[in-house]
Amino acid sequence: MLDHEQVVIRTGRRSRLPVIVAVHSTVLGPAAGGLRLWHYPDWRDGLDDALRLSAAMTSKFAVAGLPSGGGKAVVALPEGMVLDADRRREVLHDVADVIVALGGTYATGPDVGTGPDDMASIGDITPHVFCRPAHLGGSGDSSPHTAQGTLAALRAVSRRLYGTSSLAGRTLSVVGLGRVGAALARLLAAEGAALTVTDVDPGKRKVCDEVGAVWLSPDKILAAEVDIVVPAALGSVLDEPTVRGLRCRAVAGPANNQLATPDVADLLHQRGVIWVPDYVASAGGVIHAISAELHRLPAAEARARVDAIEDTVTDLLRTAESRGQTPAQAADELARRRLRAAPGPTGP
Ligand SMILES: NC(=O)c1ccc[n+]([C@@H]2O[C@H](COP(=O)([O-])OP(=O)(O)OC[C@H]3O[C@@H](n4cnc5c(N)ncnc54)[C@H](O)[C@@H]3O)[C@@H](O)[C@H]2O)c1
Picture 1 (cartoon, helix red, strand yellow):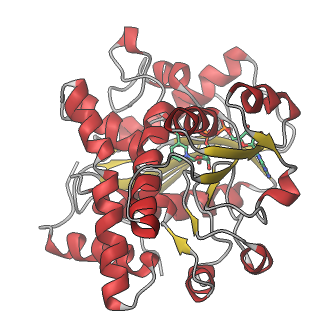
Picture 2 (cartoon, protein in one colour; picture 1 turned 180 degrees about the vertical axis):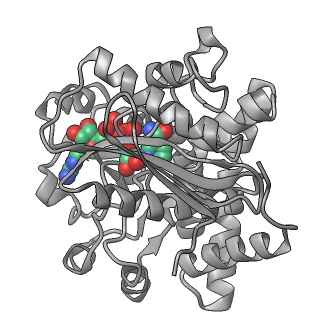
């Protein structure tokens, strides 16, 4: 059964590439969610991603308490295709055409494979776009805010485990030192945390040196004996074998879709490992973009909303414990409750 309000699949008139926009829900407000420009063996794999990721955006906004709905755009590039600047602009304008056709039901932003400059190109055609560069009136790169929000989630985990939100002296392993992972590693180092880090890109060793961390290979880091593992690379890192090998007390990080399958949340729980749902820990970027650009909040108030992830996670962990649920169940229940309490879909 289709769980989405609408899904548009269109061959871009300029690029001839498949442009997919999934609007999962506008029950809480107009949908928002990033544009993934990524290689897929088949465009239908991109469709699967758009369906799954747009549903996660609905939950992300609902748990964050924001009046936005869940959507996602995917352009499925054939394996090996490299876009030059002109072709890239064509693709982005094709995406903008679909956004225009949706009449304000969906606004996009950056995701894997896209950034603020791409949002500027989309902004040539439609105003329904977040995170354009600051000189064009956008809120720019979301990753520092995602990192800030993850730090807030980690403070809540620390409070639950150790009775203090301070991360000084805690041991954490950061898996992936990309835009978010590197920013988060810097924040954690500044807090006095002891870090173990990795990336498949050996060039990221300079971030490791900068933050005084220990480098472990990607295949060893999940089994490192640390307080908290922080997934900050790509999805599906937690499956049965990796969870059985964990030697940490909690897993919380910004990477999307960390669980290979939903039942891995139960296994984490059985093993006594606290798992903060990824859509809660990674919400800082969208919370900031929506607050700054849509709600026009001053910087300090937008930042306060991002920092409030600490309270959200604290409440979720407390609720889960008191009800004998996993944090994933508690978060899903909270999202469903907020959706049920809303009046209904937002028209274009
Ligand atoms: N950028 C944001 O604001 C934002 C918001 C919400 C969620 N996220 C999620 O956070 C994660 C990181 O996002 P990003 O913007 O930093 O992406 P990025 O592409 O800048 O960084 C990802 C990093 O992970 C590394 N990597 C890939 N596979 C790896 C592996 N198996 N082991 C170790 N390292 C590996 C890459 O080399 C890269 O350095 C993604 O899952 C993304 O969907 C990002």
